Image (cartoon, rainbow, N blue to C red; front, side, top):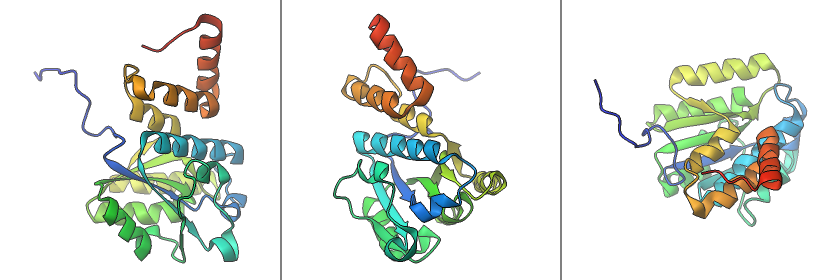
Length: 216
């Protein structure tokens, strides 16, 4: 029988071990997205963006045909990374863009976390390509969307079958924090949760307002 130890599993993400790539969160891409409500999508995109920025996660922002067709990246994302350049592409598969890959290699992290539009094209492409090249890949499922539920679900299944690990936006935030005793990021985490964490965030607001509650 194995001996239990109070240590985190190696499959859990830390702020230092991965690169977050946010892909094609743009107006034209969102118009045809039907697998997730636009408000929920924008909220979840904001949640992971502010989490990554707050925890100092290496993050790449990339768009496709921004000026000529797809439009600007969601302001909820760019607001979290003021002044950061957007890498605009012609390729649907982010992993085929030389500028993006140069940045991935410059950062040099072994894990890639993906979110964006659409799941079945712009997320499947880099996920399968990165896995084939030896990276561990995580996909934030509720910060992705596609033209139908079927398209999104089949894309998620395809990536999982190839070895990608699915997660949610709130899970991403809480996995970066993981211990309420980490006081340096406590206010950051609860602040993001209160603003973008839906019912969970409302619960934090209520508990703190009514009872002065404090996790941990």
